[in-house]
Length: 216
Image (cartoon, rainbow, N blue to C red; front, side):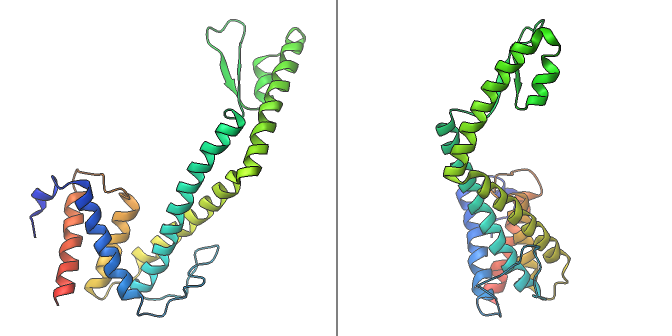
């Protein structure tokens, strides 16, 4: 196994392969344990699992679902933006200001365009904002962007709760340490982009531990 210093220069694809190999190793282990595949976690992130490997598995399921929903909501946001022609905001020309101000609520319009003299400008601005908001809401309903965004927020909370339970659970085997370290790296550096200490070293330690367990 290369030393930690050399790991700093490893390409991203190699770093990801390390994590993929660890995921495959842990998945194979947990496939042989009692695991509720139909409902691995509830809405609060609670689990009846009591050992580290089982906790890792339900955390990993939530982690993967969170990633899937994140990618989905990003894609849907692009679709909604195309359909609606932009975010539900408008630019206001404010007397005395050199640049227009972006607003997204009628309350902001009232504050920025106060008084009887600005009544017509306020009305026009609110009409334009309402039209943009209607377009956004129609597109949002069509593509399900807000629903997906809400689901992503919910699963992210579940993932965070499960990760905390995993890290706090007592470890009794090398595999338990592997599971905890893998979860930390995946959570804090999901794209394996960090090159400064301690991330390259942690990734190499993780790979070392997997090699030790596989050769035992």
